[in-house]
Length: 247
Image 1 (cartoon, helix red, strand yellow):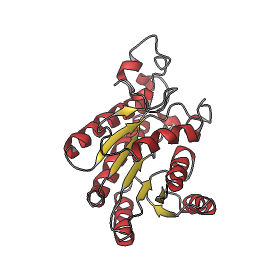
Image 2: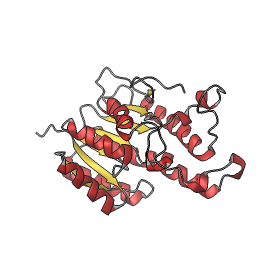
Image 3: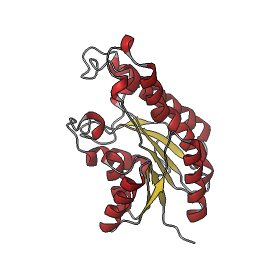
Image 4: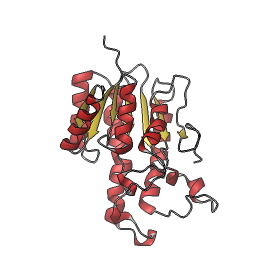
């Protein structure tokens, strides 16, 4: 029986997702490079393979139910189980920027389709495969901007960022993650939130002060946590990796 761990990372063709796949590959996992764009996904998988990682592209658009179901069927057929799910895909569309009272409803819906509903769709589709793992791990990528504590503290550096769509989508994701952690408590599956911090990625025009590798390291900590590790935790983004983030 092949005991190599299988990890699926959504939005893995670039940024934090790509670096997460690379770091998990360095740990000996087979990484499934989830991406909605086949050309970019194939290229990312080839780049990782060129670095010695067992990487395979899996087409998945988290906002498309047929695509999500097809990805789950393929993983079942080719691997029979899933050990790690990293819900990394996330967006902050320009149409959802501006003052809360000026937020476009289309932009708000678009943001939630990927950042919240997409995570639920992928998690539900992959859970039967994760249940076959001796130690399944689900890591959802959140943000300090999803922390109500930080957003309501005038002394917090995140207080000025009043982005209705993105911020609330990450707060909702936090609640979604807690719901899964509670449902799966007592099983071998652990569900946690990784805060990569303000990383330089396409999401923010590469303006972040942390690197995608630093963000990915926070994800990998939770993707590889032991049986005595946390379930339902929100951590990362601090000077010292693995620090809790206030809710």
